[in-house]
Image (cartoon, rainbow, N blue to C red; front, side, top):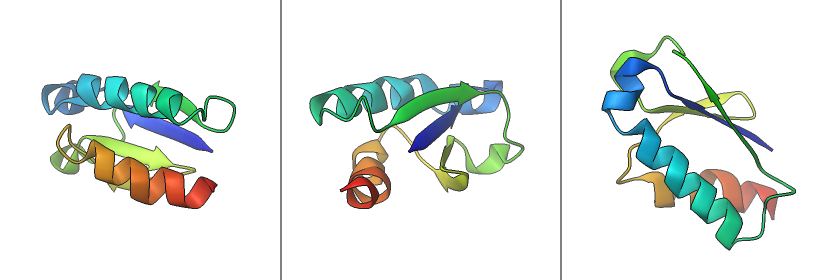
Length: 80
């Protein structure tokens, strides 16, 4: 599974760094390093809805406050 987080300026201002750090921690805590590939990209062209995160190409809007719920719903349930 490939998870890509936008780290462009708009998403950065909306908390993309915290989202990246939390996703790294969650992947590690669940032992999914070999199943989940985290990546970053600049501007996904949907700045108004950032922080933009794609899971295998499917776009989602995530914030530091919703990253745990996002991980459970979009990563854990699809990988297990």
